[in-house]
Image 1 (tube, rainbow, N blue to C red):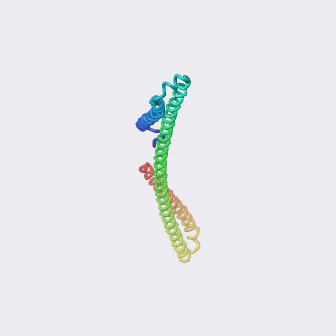
Image 2: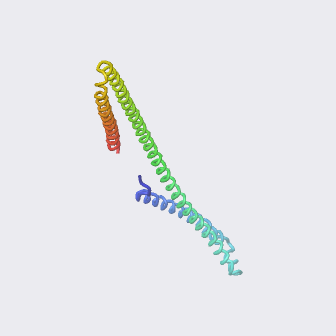
Image 3: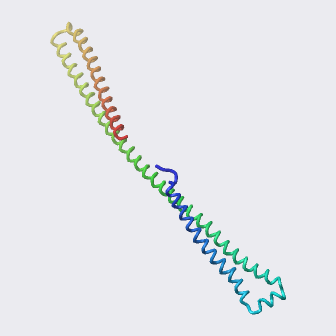
Length: 205
């Protein structure tokens, strides 16, 4: 994601500003010529110009002042127009870049939101599946314990107290082995689940 204005865009905006400066220079020159030279021409075209000038030499200074004011007005208009063009093109360019950056950030936000939502959904599904498997193993363990107790009860009833200690010892060993087996199965399921999640995350990245 770029955060700075490219050189191509900068040169393009600079060329646009230069064109506007030329246009406003031409407009200011036309206004200056119309006011300054026009005022001078009006005064010089009067029939009694030279007579008035001979009687009042300061009249020439008045004419030149009027022409200078016309040229000054044209120059001010050209300067203001060029400055306004520079400001307008610069602000428009900055606005366009901010809009592009905003669109890119919005797109990035949407992509991240979709990705996080997808990962959360997959994690929730994997967690539910793991809970179901653990519940299944728990049910199988409980069922095996119940069957073992029933078998021990029958053996105690048929075989007497001599077998009681022997079978109790075997039952405890069976419970221990069964608990270890259940624990190993749960650990394997957890490792398999986290391994699949890690591989999915790496594939996504």
